[in-house]
Length: 106
Image (cartoon, rainbow, N blue to C red):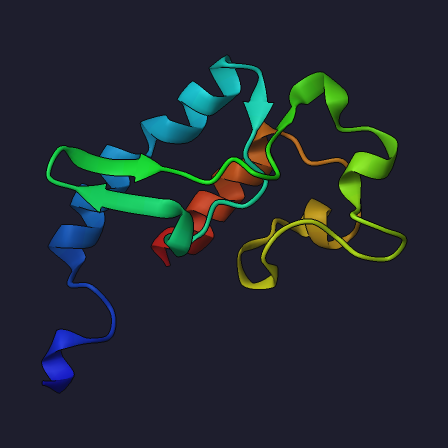
């Protein structure tokens, strides 16, 4: 039973990375930044992984000011998967989603 849990072996992680890597690019090409890319926001299907839950996604030109926070002092995102700029309360960029993808794969 214990072998059914824990880290994925290297080969499936490589496959997941190869299949999931185009997702942030597609999101960014649509003019969005996801801002919360984490394992629970990836649906693994027979057709491959799908990024879901765009509830806090924002357009790249709509990230200034209050959209970084839900209310004063509260940051948007999941702490274990947030990019350094998100943690610092700075404006996220497409690179933020790439960082979060790396954290997700780790």
